[in-house]
Image (cartoon, rainbow, N blue to C red):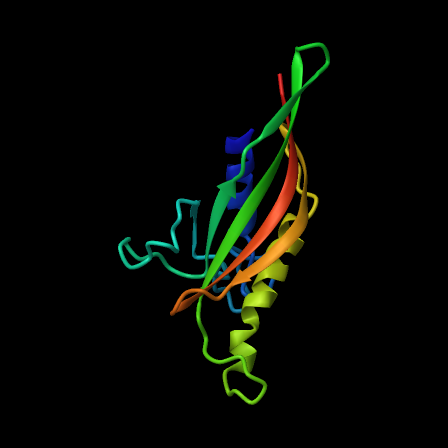
Length: 161
């Protein structure tokens, strides 16, 4: 179930274009391939904490963190239902000051657009072993020098037989 969800997330996130549409990989009016917004997708492993020590990865990047799954018996021990939170760590380059008089304001605030694009692409997503991906929390971490990390937390329900 986590594997299925992770692979589905890769598939869906890879389709998001820079304008928020789900057209990445398709051809535009000029016959050029539309580039995906998300340049790198991986499982979360404290990636931004050790950014100087790791091989660099292209940005925007999304790292998928699975929180613990809480299971309960459903259907007399033949089927289980689990509840879990999945955190998507959207990591972008810092675009400059976001002060009201900054020349970089529009670019600095794109991180919020990107978070909305991810949500629009993922809201209500479901698969064979998981149901409904629902956004429950968003947090912006400005605690890094050259990057901005936006953490969107989703609730998901798994089923297991």
